[in-house]
Image (cartoon, rainbow, N blue to C red; front, side, top):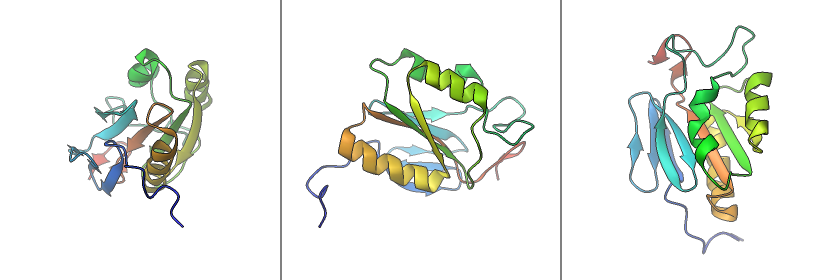
Length: 148
């Protein structure tokens, strides 16, 4: 039984996670090594890494600067949940990043990018794109290198 069978998929749902980006249901392709930030039914190419191409701190935790979350700071109403896809593997979220997002009133889930994309697709279809956001790093991402 498919309980969501009659519901249309959001235009920002992810059809494919490719090595250096994403293909969305709307036909938009985010590529060239950019991540995707999906918020309130809008899709943004996203490059949250520092100039040295790092998203993981010295402890191996996912940590990016507060300015990388600028869209989440501006959008109203804020999504209830942010799903972070960290590339090919899952790492812990740094306390600084978790504290910043918590200060915005947003709960956070972390997963590898493929599973985060699937989770976003399901929850955005079920709950609406205003309640769920995603921040996705391409599956080909390597710290200090980028997408290779």
